[in-house]
Image (tube, rainbow, N blue to C red):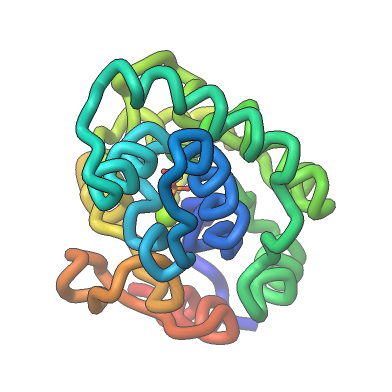
Length: 223
Ligand SMILES: O=C(O)COP(=O)(O)O
Ligand SMILES: [Mg+2]
């Protein structure tokens, strides 16, 4: 059996492990609805996901023609409360993910999550889908306090440490993920099925996959 040359395979959450776009869009629309705006289709909100919930809401508000910091502050908890209460209505793992996780685990690779989604939301979401216990570490946007989000390397470093250290690689769907991985000194793989329409090359990733079936063979080939 070909060896997988990594101790840890880390995953971004939104747009990488799980398609969260419909439930996040519903939460944004709930918040905008209190102002009489929207609802927006998922296609409008999807590219705004990945730089934290606040940034997603800010960009949605901008589309609605609203640029008001105080309003953004007021709407954020309304959006997050709605999201917390409806966190896995439509959210599902991407095709092939569970099978790929099964193989990696069987080969002794530790799995981990590093997301800009707040940990207090990421953890129950992964628990609801029965996945939380499969990760050696789950770190999120509130794990290290404010202003430590990807693309800074801090959360990726924390994920590697909490997952027990060793040689790691990180999968993500945005340049946020590839920049953070590079800054943390580890290689990255871009998934093409996530929330931005960019190639792996455009995202600055070391490689790309179009489906989780490609992950294990890619890791086996890794130099
Ligand atoms: O921005 C978010 O809330 C989540 O983003 P991520 O899981 O893609 O890091
Ligand atoms: Mg993402």
